[in-house]
Length: 288
Image (cartoon, rainbow, N blue to C red; front, side, top):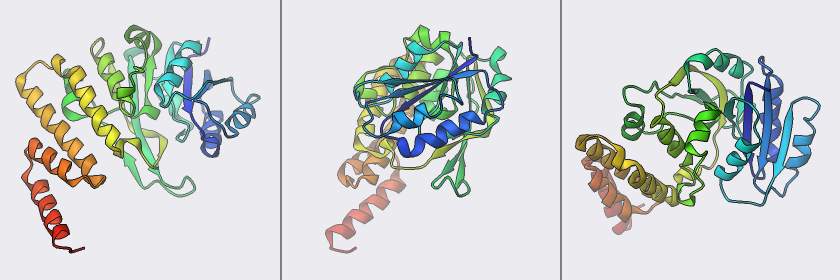
């Protein structure tokens, strides 16, 4: 039985998945299986995956399109045979020491995560490092108050923990934020989160669902789902303001200025509000 199961959800990523799988071939630690869960691709993803059958212990699982990564990841969990689950998005990739370094932390952890370098062009140098942070105190409260700290393609989780929480939520209200929902539910049953402050993989920067209006609605749904588990009114108030600010930024980026102003106001931030008002006044007067 392998130590790790690497679960890769994908949808029409034939142009990217080759680099993803190639990075697994080069891993220093080799006791792992790969499960590619295809969410209804219509391109040649299957052909690329099958070209790796002589290089990796790899399975390919195709199903009709569901519309998000939760169900493909859960299919991968059902097929996995390892005690540890690694999530890897099909447009990301790992450095050769990823599994080797995470393996060193297995005995003391239930969840392991690390930084990721961010690329626009994989042939160029990374544009910056996506730094995570060490979670402190009550893990659930930290995640609610200070926002998500775990990037999907960095996370390694004990499978028995995922089984206890019932896997990834397939509630479509959580699409784009089902990862944070998963970490929050895990934090209610274990505080053994281990952060390695180094980049062992790469995140490809492209159009992100977290910039859409739908994501603002998902944030609200997540907030309502978990707010009752916060222990103090102070934390609840702070989390609410943080939620409103994050929603305001999303509406602002999508040029929904009226909604953005309302959420900035609810977040209690006067500087972004005044800047937005100045922008709106200029638009009304016909200035560019």
